[in-house]
Length: 105
Length: 168
Image 1 (spheres, rainbow over the protein chains, first blue to last red):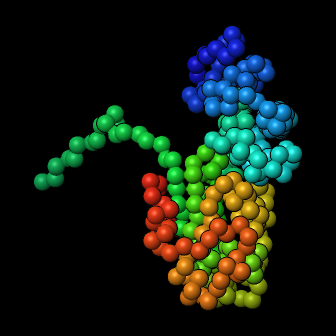
Image 2 (tube, chains in turn yellow, purple):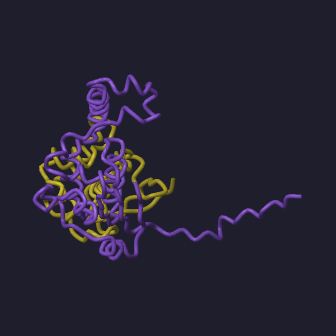
Image 3 (cartoon, rainbow over the protein chains, first blue to last red):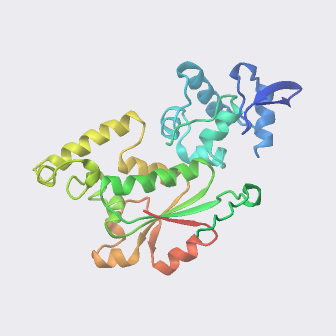
């Protein structure tokens, strides 16, 4: 675990760069993480996915699968991959300040 | 006398990331189809480029008339730990399939038709093997709309260039 600085805020991240404490997350931090991962600007559609991931994680303790993301977030699978080409679930979790999803689906 | 082989130094192994996979699905049973689908979907989830090539009975996964009827093999499958005579009883395969599907649903693993759609929507390519298509006397109309085309082995290799090939 290391400390890194996003938007002038020091946060704890794991070896892969995921925030270890979702409580340290803020929207400016999300924007910086997105930028670092090839998404220069978070649109409303990006935010919809990021917030859905985060809220679901905070409510249930685990991040939704790509299947649930496509069915329940309001953003279909095709669009998810257009918004987050390097992997929607993984990237939205990282931007949303929650741990990396552990599921295989 | 045996000589101990020198252990390769970890530092010397160059670690590269996988950027692209081409997965061949050659079997038509539930346990023959799912591993390839899970690996293809998992690749896309990691941002890895993925293509699926269906050959022989693996074609059942993309056939309109068979896609929703994929069954677990209860005969000739030692993994079932079931005597062959019992596995061959009428309805046994349907029962085993039903039980396994219930378990998969709990894990959020979709049924084959929905899984194929999910994988296609994720940007993976889905292809049928020409030799198998000809052998079973099939044509494009026999396949679900997510199928991107029918390829020869040569075309498959051309498509797989620059990536890893996984045969299941």
